[in-house]
Image (cartoon, rainbow, N blue to C red):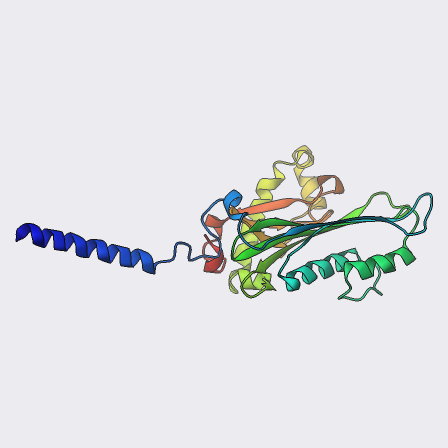
Length: 260
């Protein structure tokens, strides 16, 4: 009898444990605990879109357009969003409508471009899982006679379930914007010491290139990445700086569902 009771007790304990495990989701956050090389295999399906064009009918030195983008089979909304965002980033003329597609922009561009003008539009995934698709959209443009090309980078956090962009205010708690800025300042200070020009003359560098707050952020498996464009916090030669804030430093600052 004693042995039977012990077995019954063990069976009840095991049953309770299994029930508890079954009732608790493995990942309650939208940022899984797995590393990026695993989670990047999940999420929306992508296909590359590559276009390399010169102005039709042009001979000699001609304006050029290159597109290295993505399409999302089965997700027309996201595909159109990326296409229109790239067109808006490339549009250097206010007469280009806000919802212009890249093809409509290219048709317009051929009418306006100088002989040596060039535009490169690009989209790539920075991070993705079943819940989120984080994209980096880029536009590089060279205008005839300019000293160098100019570029813009935008990070996009796409919620796969609602099929919409997540804004900065949806990711950061409403009363924690200043706290987020402070964490970004600390990440900026750590980045500064890696820059040779800063080490040569810290005071002059800070005067010329002071810290700036940005809401151009992306969620990743390691933390939140803030991306800056040329001339925002560093000279052109520094490219487009990235600052990373690890998730442990963002507890109580981000919405809990965006913390692993």
